[in-house]
Image (cartoon, rainbow, N blue to C red; front, side):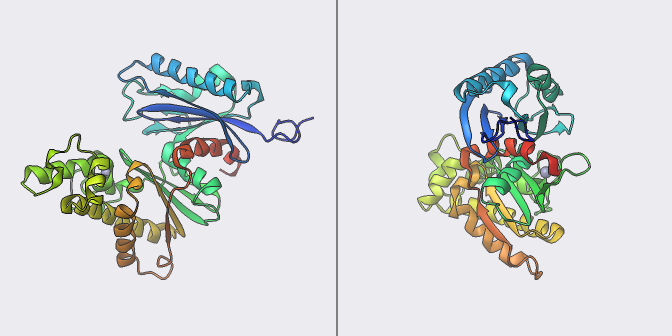
Length: 326
Ligand SMILES: [Zn+2]
């Protein structure tokens, strides 16, 4: 006997969740309660060709299915969160940080290999949906989920629905312009949130300030990354603290604009740079309070993401479980 999702009665429906990143490929079996089983990870083969990367992904998938004791035939579908850009909903991906995949037909290849309904979407959109389902976004009416990491990504969940936009890119808050004369962004524009608040942007600004002679304990630090800048900031280094204030302010400004545009009631911020905690969140909230004056933007709640390293997988699973609402 099966219920409408095809799972046995009393057994929650399960999906295969895949999180494709520039450093690792993570997979797991996730059930309809959000429980994660058989978490497996393989390194993303650096500078490998398309087929080598796909084989590495298949290896991780086989490990997950074995560890979760779940045959592919018992699954409801496959949800994939992947770095952009991509063609959505076709799932033809060209992740900036995986040069071996350019116009790689990831969705089609997964369907051919496993014969399951498959959704491939932007990893930040998946994160937003996952945090809304099981994380810090639960109960929000209009949620912006943000990943502040190598880039700054985002996704919008409105009334329980993940917004796609005309090309599948709705929620790209990292490219809201917050400093028209600010640093050049990888997208070609100037002063985007991402050009100031991403991990590499923080590291670049630190290097530039040191080269200009700014006094700082960062002088002898290598490698210079958002993490090492955070360590120096916690130890009281004035340059490092100023760089996090600047990043937090850029995020606060971007969020204020997004809040006015779509009437947000909550923002969830995750990703490696958000691990800096108060260093980032204090200036972010202060700037948001300074910039957001409309009655409906004043009570906006900003929270750190709650799902940690499983956010990508839970979000990928949500693409299938909440697909019917899209
Ligand atoms: Zn940009």
